[in-house]
Amino acid sequence: MKDQQALYLQEMGITRWQVRKPELFPFSFNCAIDLSHYKLLLVASTADFAHPLLLSIVNAFNLKLSEVYCCSMAQFKNLQGQLPELIWSTQGEINQPQGHKLLTSVTIDQLVNDAKAKKSLWKQFCAFNQ
Image 1: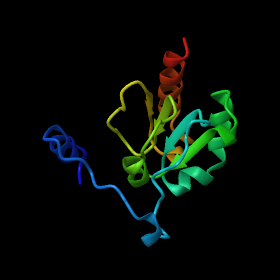
Image 2: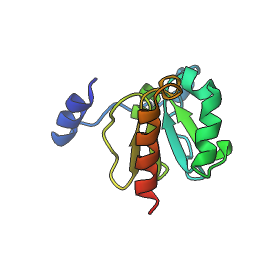
Image 3: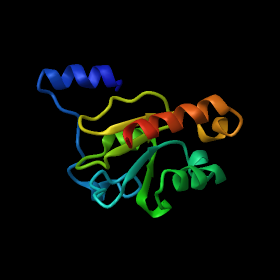
Image 4: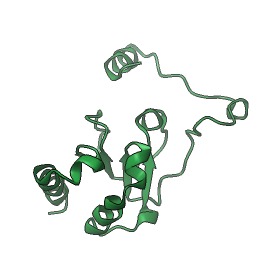
């Protein structure tokens, strides 16, 4: 379901489905994750998670890798509960959750060769930390 459709249904009082018996789906993503101790939520592909540049970017943000929670776009859409204040998406635009700071960029693989994209990501981060 697209974000606009979900938003439209939400406005009508119809909420997204929620897994009520997670034991029936042992290989699916568990939506009830405690994200309170994370400082950054990274919405990216698995290739981005494994990229060596990710550690450098996280260090530049003055964070430890243990303070970053990584998930796919599908997993992000199903997350429930309190999200970290800072959310970074390499999967394109997402609806910004209220009260959270949203960073968007191209994939990390593309960041390696694109100085303008790196500068844009850094400017977004610095704007939130003034």
